[in-house]
Length: 164
Image 1 (cartoon, rainbow, N blue to C red):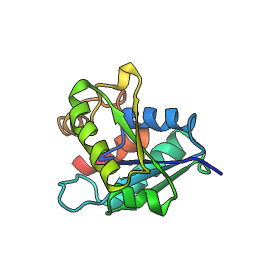
Image 2 (image 1 turned 180 degrees about the vertical axis):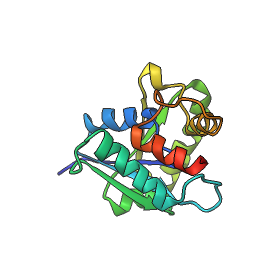
Image 3 (image 1 turned 45 degrees about the vertical axis):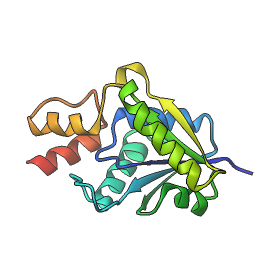
Image 4 (image 1 turned 120 degrees about the vertical axis):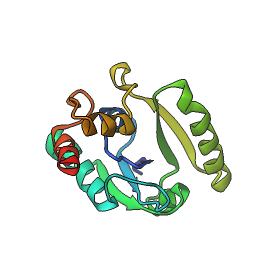
């Protein structure tokens, strides 16, 4: 039986930090479902459809990762419901800094209360990518800064197109 992990997030936009988590998780699991949240109470720069397209281009066009091992989907449900849908009992979450831990710890606990068969696994991106956040990437590009060290070529193009 294949081991499937769910990696939920907003990916607004995807960064090298997210990509590090995906690459590391590919060594641990047979398949990764990247769940792009379409929760309506957040103020996204990109629509759900745009974020899915950006993630797909970053992973499969820019980085040429294996399409058979990664599935990118939109979801507006509980992450535990996404786990049920894809027959997974693993939620992946990335940690950048200690400041992420408290929120992620609470989220993992809530998911565990919702479904006690679901485990959350935390992965850290490489040191050079731990400072990257989607929020900072958007702010830098908005102010015409260079974001080549933070995300892929196609994502940079999408960001520039949005701000020009």
